[in-house]
Image 1 (cartoon, rainbow, N blue to C red):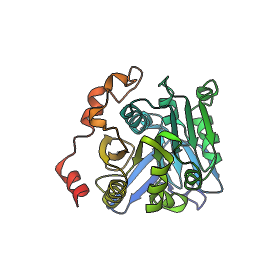
Image 2: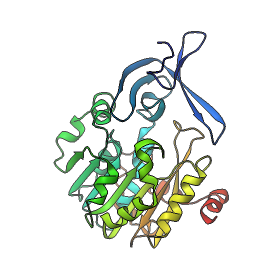
Image 3: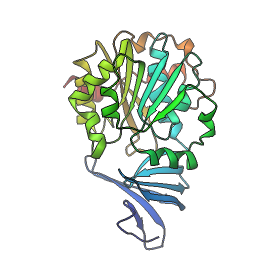
Length: 292
């Protein structure tokens, strides 16, 4: 495999070893992921999609040259973006997820028997197709009648759904390309309207180390709409600098008062009741970002 325009982010070193290089401008760092084998690559309508096999992270989904999730540590992201808002709500019935075409967070939601509807809204049908082949087998979902995937622009979809969902999970990409609309102020208004009167939403809100503006704007936009807004943290080895943030907003329920006896952690690999509570303890430098 040689470096070429059709494989963004991939480079071969002087020893013939292929790497994915991810440059993070805000952090002034460049992270390399050693590739054992390219399993899949194609250009969809929206982006370049690759799946690689690696020593350090197993299979990795790569979009436009940037690693997104891996089979070795993907459970961390999926568990923390999913379980926290579901458990925060007292009695959720309907859950929708914008993004997350690999459906890993839907798999976590299925652990909650009280849920009656689990919808995944993914703009790129090819992401779902490829992830079902290489990352999360479709057999995981085929037997669960609550699950439905909707291939549509999340921004357009949410405008059409008002007062429909108890829990929303916004697994949005970086604020570039089609995903940029999911960071605009209007989107937060549509999220609020999509939720029921006591609804809860969790946003992927970036690295608190090098995506400080993303985290700050997410928190501030949510504070303008919701009475309860809390950021929580997680450590994800795949991501540059390791630390990542999610921000939860709620019309009624406070995650700090959640009934953790409802947490379905018997088969999880990261989240426990103790981790749930500890995730909301913020270091001073992150609290200062939110207070700015």
